[in-house]
Length: 92
Image 1 (cartoon, rainbow, N blue to C red):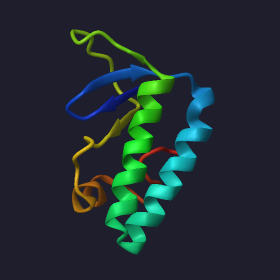
Image 2: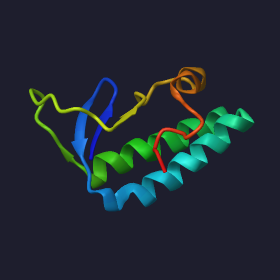
Image 3: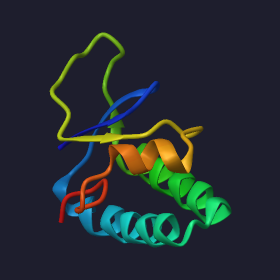
C-alpha cells in the first residue's frame, strides 16, 4: 500500500503493518474524541514515525495513487477532525 504524509511525500508499506498503524489510529481517535491535544500530537507523531520506520520512501518525482493520506506533523486537532470519516485515518 502507498501512504502519503501531507507535505512530506509517499511511502510503500506492506499490508502486514496495518495492525500496528490501526492501533495508533485508534489511540488518535480516542484522544480526538476526548479533546486531548497533547496526546493527539504525541500519537500523531508516533503514527507518522511508524510509517517512516516501516515503509520505504518513494522518490520525490514518483506520483503513485495513495491508499492512505495522513496529516502533516504540525496539523491541528481541528484540521484532522475535518479529514476524518467515521473509520479514522487507517481503514480497518
